[in-house]
Amino acid sequence: MTDTNLTDDDKKLVRSAVMRAGVMVSGAEGGFFDTFKEAMAASKAMSGADPALKEIVGGFGFPEMPKGSREEVEARTVELVHEAVGVLQAKAPNLVEPFKAAVRESVQKVADAADGTSDSERAAIDKIQAALQ
Image (cartoon, rainbow, N blue to C red; front, side, top):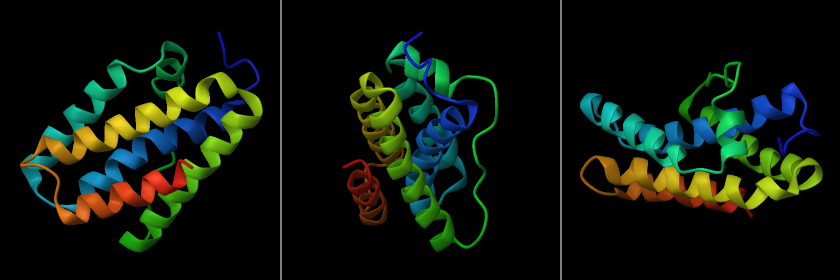
């Protein structure tokens, strides 16, 4: 296992960041049936992720659930992504690039899943990309 320095809280942070990034993009452009397509796209994106990262994301425990206004949820999601990068840089540097790649792939696949990427989805992706820096 490559994440031995990560606490359960660290793993929840990483899990929350990955999952909520996809949800943030999905929520940027509504549509009941689109949500199912986008959820499947996010899941498929994670299937090709680094095994240690997949273990964290798919591991025991729930991610932090979104709450508050759309703006509050978006701000907290961006914050989680940024915090996850910092934790991984400090405690599991070998997972930083796999984490970034998984988030990037997930959000792009979510955006593309239902009729291509809209302007609002592109804006959400741009915010997540900035948080990954």
